[in-house]
Image (cartoon, rainbow, N blue to C red; front, top):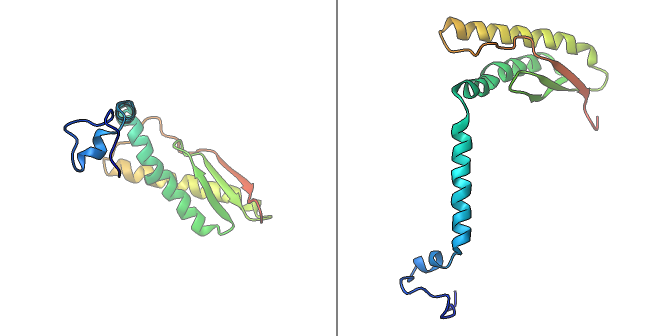
Length: 140
């Protein structure tokens, strides 16, 4: 890095600090603003919300994964925090969707019962039969 014009130099900027000293103060304030905003948003979630997000994995996602291994023509697309499940369906295999939904709901009920028996927290109300929707995979 070549020498900076005399107007931009600060007397205490030497060595590695020289790079930091010449960053624009507005940029530094903007970065601090974003960090504070992210911390506020991250801390604003309630324990109930954090529990719901954890359960989306522990209950809904695992139940969907288990059923997906039993129904090879149906594939998880998205699992919402409330348990609603979108599936991709191989061509002509929509007849398996109701059976997949039953498997999914039974898996959810079993996992919820297991958590309650272990004394783990569960939000109230908790959706035991979320919506299951399916659409043919694009490009197949």
